[in-house]
Amino acid sequence: MKVNIYSIDGKVKGDMVLPAAFETPFRPDVIKKAFEVARGNARHAYGASPESGRRHAVSGIGKGHGASRVPRIHGLNRAGLAPNVVGGMPGHGPKSYKNWSEKINKKENQLAIMSAIAATADAAIVAGRGHKFKEGSVLPVVVEDKFESLEKTAEVAKFLESLGLYADVERAEDGVKIRAGRGKMRARRRKEPTGILIVASKKMKAGNLAGVDVITPEQLNVKALAPGGVAGRLAVFTEAAVKQIGGW
Picture (cartoon, rainbow, N blue to C red):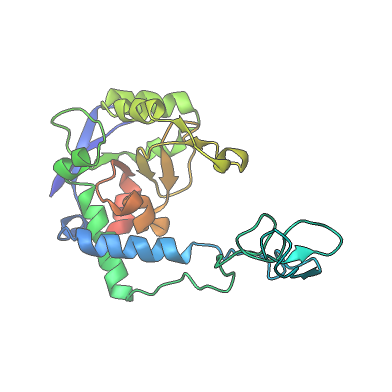
């Protein structure tokens, strides 16, 4: 399977044969399973305090007082302790000792990663995920190693525009929304669609391009290649990164 190698000017520099990983059979079922396992292992324990709703001295007032027979705080006429009252304990709240972690076979997880890598080379799967790119483009996009030396966001944006990929950045920009609920107060005010994935042999900057993530081949995982468990992310690989994947 041959693809073009582009220079940082957006022109075809040559071609190369992709490693066998890009020809792995597409297995959306395995990818989805590996994603759910990864998401479960990333969850943090949370739960109500064991003393929640139990910090007051309460007692029942009994019947015959013309009031509901819920426990009431000593010295007050306010209810307490019961799970169905304001300030009472949680009825069946989340438990901090619940274990969310899951397991997956090592080879099964490797198959999911390889299959997700192969999905980046299928234009139909990438388009089906909602990404926008120039019609007739050969995927995945492979660029020369000079691309890793770019330090300005404008230079990266110019390269993406020359290949007709900047439309996907604009799609992500248009999709930014204010989160509903309490998350607005907890450092996750905005929701941003997933955009282009840049795979480089070393860490590089992509500035504030909407939806764009940069990782190295060693960091490739199902969560990066198939966000939400749906494979086919629009990806840009450097020549050195492709060679590293071929050495697996």
